[in-house]
Image 1 (cartoon, rainbow, N blue to C red):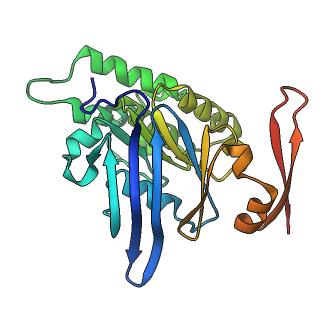
Image 2 (cartoon, rainbow, N blue to C red):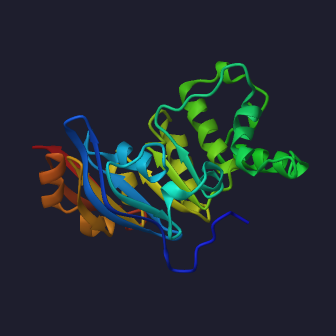
Length: 263
């Protein structure tokens, strides 16, 4: 069982008045956000809108300049790194891992928060690592050297390492950036099928439509939050992204698809 256990229906991750500055530059402006247990919340916005910065604050990699973050009702800054890591996992855009290790060992790093003198590595940990590799279609890479992997393969292994943490909350910063289309769709399917709360920054707005809710960021401000089809209106897409848009209906399954044109 994870270190923090949420009650059914509560906000598992919450921020109030969250802001972040670097010198004279204000990167985030007083963001209020409640992330619900079990949902997939997509973060979308133009480059430089604050998506990566917000994720870094939510996982404790950076400290906010203003405001507060609560993880299952407790202030994030009062919790130990171990407790946070047993509850929350993050996949960064440009993550890296020591070169001289195997893929299995790289993913096994995800088990670190759960190991101690009283709880050493066991066959259960082996099974969790192997399952994480299978989940991202990387079991065949198990014995490969990290340095021999392509960029896309490394990204899948990073996601596997996060899954090996067995988190309640998973934060992903544009996890499909280095993947071919087949593995983009596969990873998104895997992530959305997990019994966890997920916050995922995405560039592809059609992929974002599959999220439960979307938070739209613009110049460090939260400008829209809600159901994807209600949030990504033609007016919002023009104002925030500078593109004209309309929806098409996929005859295969009736899904709504965005058709975008430059302004």
